[in-house]
Amino acid sequence: MKRYTVLAALAALTLFGCTLQAWAQSVPNIRGMQPFSAQAMYMSLTGNIRWQSFKENNVWISQGEAEGLVKAQIGAPQVGANE
Image (cartoon, rainbow, N blue to C red; front, side):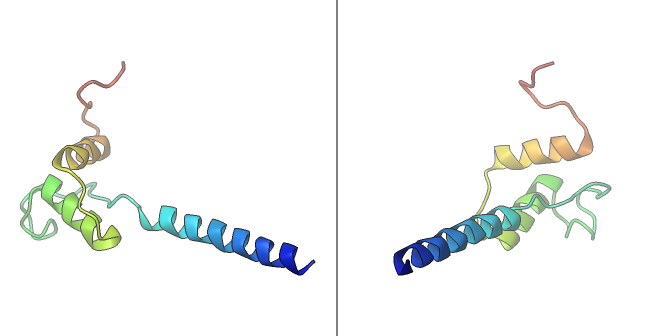
């Protein structure tokens, strides 16, 4: 019985850890932000989203990933997207 309790506790902690990781990797919101403005910290939108992602997740995303996120948020069609 003790073995099942320990296994259940480990499973719960593992699931909780996965939930925290998914929650922490949110996409920064840049809608309505103008590039090179004070709100964008005088950066391009791509640079700003890369910086915000680094601050929140402690991982740099690539330039291509950032460009895709910017295009998705401002409504521009993505290159290679299926129509």
